[in-house]
Amino acid sequence: CAKKAKTAKDDKNGLPLCRMLLAELEAHRDAWPFLTPVNHKAVPGYRKVIKKPMDFSTIKEKLANNQYLNLETFIIDVNLVFDNCEKFNEDDSEIGRAGHNMRRFFDKRWTELLQ
Ligand SMILES: Cn1cc(C(=O)NCCN2CCCC2)ccc1=O
Image (cartoon, rainbow, N blue to C red; front, side, top):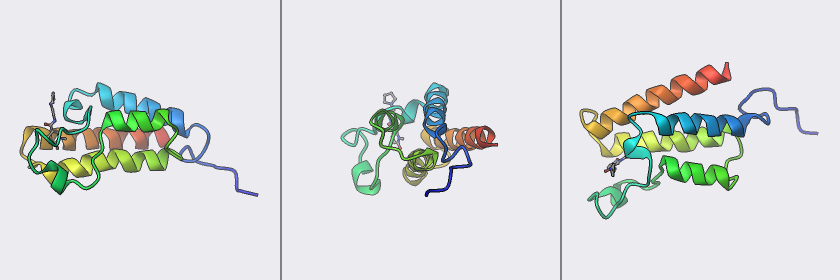
């Protein structure tokens, strides 16, 4: 039979952990560019350049619809938000800096929670 999940990534606590982490991301002062999907009508080039848009409200919806298998698949979508941001924005810009700050915050929090 399947081996018993040993780490928080896989065990039954994975999804409440995702909801907690997402709440912290949404509450962060630098979350404002990432709270809702980028409006590609208002942001020239976005639809062409960013193949897989992702944002915190979409992640919240996917969590509510049980679309994440575990913490790992959740972390993949959160990292997609930050990777898209790095691709589209200069490091030395408001949104670029916000993305770096949010990634640093997220990396610190989930590694803390997993130890
Ligand atoms: C992640 N990201 C976001 C934007 C953006 O303009 N977001 C809207 C931000 N505003 C806040 C209050 C209303 C809307 C552009 C490029 C990008 O990569």
